[in-house]
Length: 226
Image 1 (cartoon, rainbow, N blue to C red):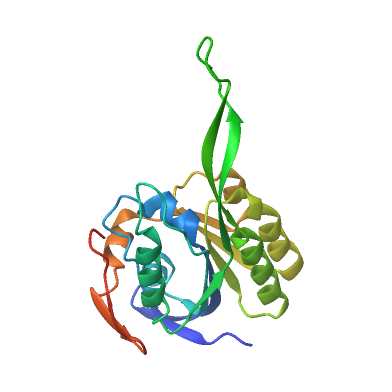
Image 2 (image 1 turned 180 degrees about the vertical axis):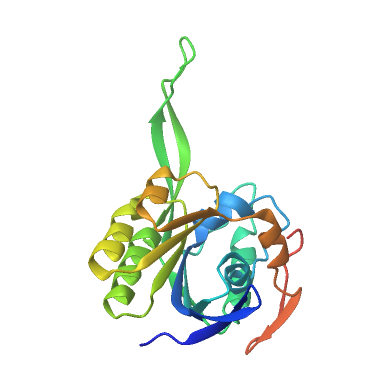
């Protein structure tokens, strides 16, 4: 697919600037725990965040959002309800596709680092683990690159496990890769990508969904406390 020229005014003259076809790949848990948890920005419009964070000539074709359904847990008994409300809201955005991995909640036995004298040396801990999102993201990133769906891929993540897929997309498919980093602390991704930027609080604040939305099932309301 060829590029479509976009008029850009520079120094009083019009200059043709090519549009860049972009796909966005969002690691939902990495985004949440990287820059949304315990903030007032959790009701996030990811499409608006992309518009605010990317150059004007980037034309976002598809946003793939990777996550897994959580289960209630001590200290956050309604986390699953809030997440499902948010995912319903996210699904109302026209170019967003949600991909699900799995969420595992197990009790495991672990050794204590400093066991008390005469006390137990092992302790049971609740181990929660999200499975599949990084593999799913890498798979669709490479699949879409192979199908020439984009000129540039935008990854919203800090997960250094994605370094090799990023390198392959750049080296073997000749695509650009931008990282929108939740924490701004992934040196490996910053070296592998074409561009690396930290998501700003100002863009998170400006990219919020309406308090209420509608879908085919009815009204969606922002969770209390969000």
